[in-house]
Amino acid sequence: MPQKPRVFHDPSELRVAIRQAQASGQRVGLVPTMGALHEGHLSLVAESQKSCDLTVVTIFVNPTQFAPGEDFEKYPRTLDTDLELLSRFEPVWVLAPEVEAMYPPGSTTEVKAPQIARMLEGEFRPTHFDGVATIVLKLFQVAPADAAYFGQKDFQQVRVIEEMVRDLLVPIEVVRCPIVREEDGLAMSSRNRYLSADERQIALSISQTLDAACLQIERHATNATTLCAEMLQCLRDDGVVPEYVTIADPRTLKSVETIEAEVVILVAAKVGTTRLIDNMLVSPPSSR
Ligand code: AMP
Image (cartoon, rainbow, N blue to C red; front, side, top):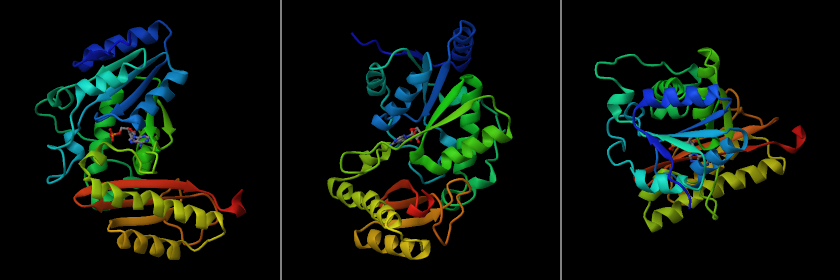
């Protein structure tokens, strides 16, 4: 019978237990999440299990990464189902803290996210990455793992964390994991459950438009400006409301005009009231 994971609510208890596990020679992996788990999250746990003896999954809907008017209150909270899903893996520990445990009353200290956070998502959600950087650094403190696993689904987020870890000398290895998609291509996301059946169909346009752009790049298209304009048109024609579409250097996230090396194509868009993001990495034939 699969065992439900051991659940901690108190961050200090978790830290002591992790230190004990490490003292006995175990390598510990950390998977930070906001819960409402799906196969994308579980792929991070599976990746951690490949090289770690123990995986710690944190489930915490972090208030500081939501701006007023965003979906903090309605964000799905499904701890029991999440624990069921995690019982497929062993050994897994879960940290599910209250807000006060992560933000002690009176706390005013926060992390200023690195420069790379200011563009793209940062233009539309100016306070988002400061909130992400703050909570991730706190999670690294209470779960001092050897490696932390993040999805490429949130491409800019991984770059922000990588830079924060470098800049603040955090002793943890950051591991990027590929995007897990539904069979029809939609990138898995906890927010997909907000979509009506019609919206779910419209949302497919995002991965399809990305696929089509990758194909064009593989077939020698090099003009990023033209490609982005075509993508914007496709998305709009399908009823998606794009916030940004960009073809960028995967390290700096600066947009490129001519595609000469590997690029990341990033999309943020609204379908109805639901905001979705997706991206794909692609290399032109000339760079292979
Ligand atoms: P979230 O719960 O949305 O904050 O995501 C927690 C972690 O899971 C982040 O590192 C995400 O990038 C990752 N993640 C979310 N969706 C996917 C997906 N479809 N494929 C791979 N990783 C994902």
